[in-house]
Length: 428
Image 1 (cartoon, rainbow, N blue to C red):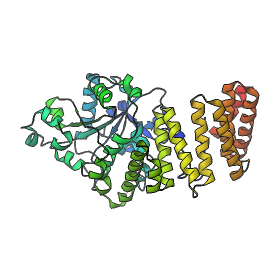
Image 2 (cartoon, one colour; image 1 turned 45 degrees about the vertical axis):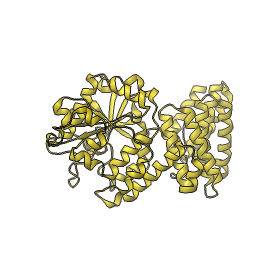
Image 3 (cartoon, rainbow, N blue to C red; image 1 turned 30 degrees about the vertical axis):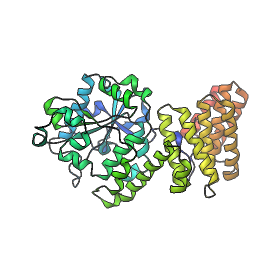
Image 4 (cartoon, rainbow, N blue to C red; image 1 turned 180 degrees about the horizontal axis):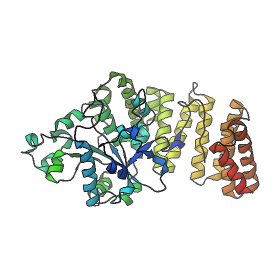
């Protein structure tokens, strides 16, 4: 199954991207790093969609210790050591998989191209998807002066209000930083499917997920390392906290990022309104274009979490929003229909899938003509459905149409052409 390749990238539905374009850092590679947290240029990351099994994914949310250098860690790699020690402790306790090969991390310094002109720009389309694919958020807190504030506090006193009581300067600064606040709120508000991660977790992580039905966010600092204690769990943030701790007002090392932060805050607000069944209100407040795009991204997250019915609901909402919007292009509507056909197929609703693909196909022909890669993609997707229905003749016809266009437009060596050719050979 394939999604479209429309030129209007920002306006076209993309729920079928899943984790495409997102890199992760295998725990085994992190442990082998000779330079602490590896830089993206060391190329230790791998595509998130390159694994054939479900892995436990950890999002590392942290404040950079040397922003002017720039580098996320201090001399001697204390943050790097905290990350590894925290994960090792959770493994020993059975909280997360004991096999290093079943754990990957997303760390900005390693997973975003640091040599790009504007590394933060890579997050613009991906922040919601990156957090959405992760099962846990980990914040390492380097704090060499921990005894100055923690000496008079017992663990249970801190646990009552980790956010407010944990006295490390780096932790207090973390709550002031715009990017850090944004990550906290995304972790709390982006859809999370406990059932998907249950086979990979145990102990207190399992207890937290079962009770809170939320993505766990843990804090592990120098205090916990020195006292051989477990990480602290943060209480999931409520909706009203977004007004109180608006990331759009947070501190930044570069004011050039302010508009990016505000864009993501808008995504958060729209996501919250969608969750509250206030999509029409979100459209009236933020506009159809932005609401439809957020619905696309939420659909991607649901797909990655195997929540296909919820994915369908988000795609249906996106289609309704775009159809009601006079400014929405036919291309965007056709792209949404294409995606909807894929979701129906995934749910086993083959007849509805074909009807939806056919509607998309007719729109695409009117927009692009018959000789376009999007038209070829829809022919290919319909061929897959026909094949599943046992209609080999119509499947072969669709595959042939797709192959003919792809050969002309993309060439014989293109992966999409080769997929259509492979299907033709399979169908005989």
